[in-house]
Amino acid sequence: MRRRGVGGVAAINKSKLAKAKFAEKGTEIAETQVSQMSQQLEEFRTKLSDFAAKHRNEIRKNPQFRNHFQQMCARIGVDPLASSKGFWAELLNVGDFYYELGVQVIEVCMATRPRNGGIIPLEELRVRLTKAHGKTREDVTVDDLSRAIKKLSTLGNGFKVIAVGSQRLVQSVPVELSMDNTAVLQSAMDTGYASIKTLCDEFQWPTDRARRSLEQLIKEGMVWIDSQNASEDLYWFPGLFNNEK
Amino acid sequence: MDRFMWVTTISLIKGEFEVIQKHNVRIYDGDNRTNFDCGTLRLTSHQLIWDDQLQDRTISLGLNLVQKTEEVIAGFNRSAKIILYLQSKPTSQEPGPKISSQFNYIRLSFRAGGQSEYYAALCNQLSRKRWITQVTNQRQATRPSGRHMGIVGIERKIEQKQKETQSTISQAFSDLNALMDKAKEMVAIADRVAKKIEEKKGQLSDDETVQFKSYLLSMGINDPVTREEHGYGNKYHEELAKQLATFLKSLIEKSDGLMTLTDVYCMYNRARGIELVSPEDVFIACKLFESLKLPLRLREFDSGVLAVQSESHSVEVIVEKITKIIKSKGCITAEELSPLVKTSITVAKEGLSAAENLGMVCRDDSVEGLRFYLNRFMKDP
Image (tube, rainbow over all chains, first blue to last red; front, side, top):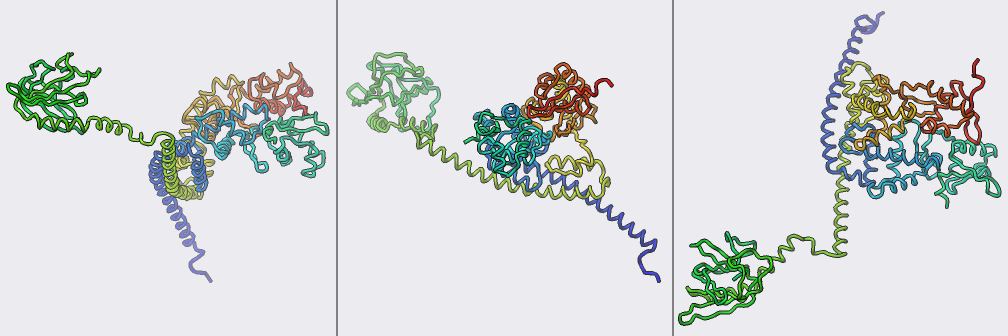
């Protein structure tokens, strides 16, 4: 016995036709949406330029407002810093602020690299930047800096902010720090140095593991040996000298 | 008499008003009769104006110059007079009918009578000294904030400024919220369109896809679908790539054909000064070098370092150079190499590892640092 309505050639054709029709309709909808988007975009552009005319200076001057702006953008999935050709950069000038900051971050990191081996606390970076620019520079917060540095990561495996304990460090050399390396950094955070003994005590590591981790850091130029200490060698992070209390 | 000034047209200044006028008044310079013999004498709150319409001449005297007044009653064969004793001539005075005078008083002869009335009005105006208040008024008008001087004034100013900033800030926040609501709508639409494009690839015309992509770029919406699928055929980035190529041409030759992308970014933006470009734009533009047939290439090293390389300086050329240097020195570290080839340490390091990959050099990895020696096994088979 034959079931009615399904299985026949006509039915297949019919469903094919329906599918084609649906696809066609879908394209149509997409098309109208693209044109709709262009309209909306134009509207948004005027809104944004109104906003820019009123509050452009606030964004540059007020760190709190700037932060709020960035957060709102992140929440709705918009990156105002993505392209210098975008509305945000063009009308609101947010781009220049962060890009310039990025350039300055690179310069400071390059200048200090021979001394600190490419590790610098975020706060120190901020102080250096502010000092270098005197009064002309608006208030730069640590938050602004992390954002600028995050943008720099596009330029290759070079710049990143690493969180060590409660503090944040900026790493400006393309080295992948292992978990152990980071642990060493954390241990040295307060004093500026680590030793094999302190590491073994703190993390219950075997001596070999501590030594290996430290030697790796020496090779990268992030750690200097101090062999004048009476009991054992100390491994100093020159980048963390200022943290010494 | 020398205190009088010529007046071309009678116009009263602000706050000045006419009090009284008498016809047929003659002016005496001290004891002497003058030819100002038959005019109208007007008294205003600020000055005396003598005006002769027949001969079309007008002179005025500021009341501030009048020191003392005296009334002389009319007598036989003598008209009633008012004597004005004047202050010495002010240093900056506009020209008048007489340059100097030996007398410091003038007499006004009221030949038509009415001098008592005039005298009373004159004394009244003199005692009020309206010209003084007028001067102070002027001063207040020019400096309205002058009232709060000193530290209190400064404090108030700061407070006021703070209030203003506070209100603009709160306004800015609410404006921002409204703006972001609008942006949110945009993102939602973009999402829908992107999904459509993903579902039925190619069903949307290329034109529209390009258009859509430029919208996304304008809004700063990151959309992996269109970005990866359709390449970066953006006009802006193409232009940027061309500009970068011109800009880097000489620089890259100087640094031995290889520069890290970070350096490129820094130098290019420093050269621009304003309207800086974003790291992403630089990255995308560099990716376009090959398709635009520019003599530069973007190169990614194994360590993840990105660098711009001149086409003429292939890795082989660099490796050959490094090998030559090592041959002459015996061994070398990246730090020693970098000044020799005038590049950054990062680039030197990458060059050495590239040489190692080709089997030209071999490493000695110790606490002392990473040293590279010539690979003697590879030497001449």
